[in-house]
Amino acid sequence: TKPWKTACVAGRAEARRQACAHPLPARRLCFSSLIFLILFLLFLQFPAPAVAALRDGRAEQARISAEVFEHKALDHFYSAEFREAEDLYKKAIALEPENPLYWNGLADSYLFQLLLAAGRLDSRFYSAANEFLDAKPAPPDAAILKSMWEALTRARRLAEERIRANANDAGAFYALAVNYAIEAYYHLNLARK
Image (cartoon, rainbow, N blue to C red; front, side, top):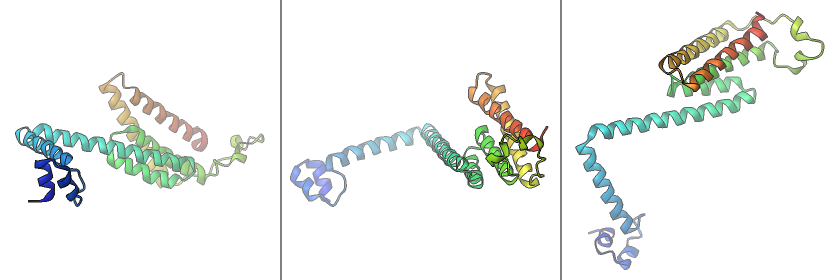
């Protein structure tokens, strides 16, 4: 028999010292083996709840990973790295495609790429001379503009669906408000409507 098995059965300190090749202390090993055996037997008896718990765990992990991507995207966004933010929002959407806030973030990263290309993020643009009011913006990149509208439309549809399902869904109302704010910012700064 293995030294750690002897330590498990006998529980003697000397045998545990001999079992230094095994990373876990002998009593912990016995206890963890027992827990594993119980869980395994429960899994055999009740496979559906165990599989559902595993699936729920994976969904929770995907949600957490998507939030990490969103936080990293915000870091890039506030550093004026809009393409990097776009890539991270796409990763968050791949993990959690039904979250309207991620679609809003993607649309916002597209909008700020357009604003940067049009020179609308330069602080001199908003000076006392009111160049903001007089200057006609350059036409935006059609591909980025199309992507922005697709992301805005998707976010709005997802938020409205959540509101129809639950009229008290504060997160959905927030996502819808952000969506309208992004659209208004586009109209104010680029479309001039």
